[in-house]
Length: 332
Image (cartoon, rainbow, N blue to C red; front, side, top):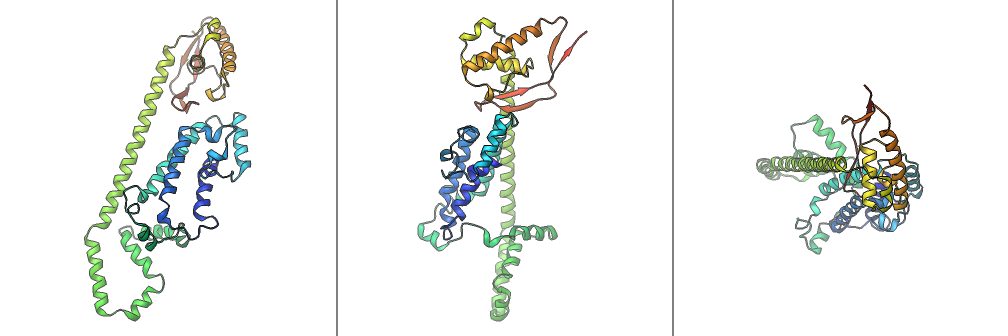
């Protein structure tokens, strides 16, 4: 939440409600909402934009301005360096993925080819609306209370009740309306009730929620597939000999360390994001192989992986899953 606020929330608020934007027309903010989605994608693809020790506000914040709260960012980095945020990368990616879905839903009216996108500059000016919802604070809460008390009512009915209470509309009607005006208003109301607007709105909402559920299911299936592929690869990898380590590439070093950490439960092997560069990984692997050799030399001891406690997290590369499993030693 802290990282998201620094990267997206505060920059977005500066753009839509900061000094000098009081006359901003919300209908002209389509490019801004595209920028929000693009920035979320950028962090999802490379969370180091925010979690790296040398993270720069110039590329990490959506508007390229300085951090709103530098101390908050430093606090997160400090906790990460102390190992108190082992799943920070995973949590950051997951949070921005969820935010991206919400932004897409909330800014659907700005989509390319939509009604707003097709408006001319003149039409947008004629339909000017403020860039914030300050004038409508509390309207959503009032709507929730209304629908709780009248669950069978419709959004159209609520809007009618809300509008008539604004700007002395009811007083105006009592003063000016004739019987013909009331008859016409009733005719229009019946027409709107009969054309299925509420049914269409609910159908569209249901279709969107179904699509969202399908996206989440596909994402979960893809994550499970990658997890299974990773486990198979690590199970098939052969434990290296100590004298081979110096000639290994970084990829082979990580594979060996992953196997020793996840398959043989060597908790002294750190997560991939905390292993340092190649020289440090060579040192880690040599120490891990020595520990593994010592365990293997213990008679009558067998290590079995248990599948019932799995914690998944994305590795530093972001395209694999790391799996931590409990192991137990069984002695006859």
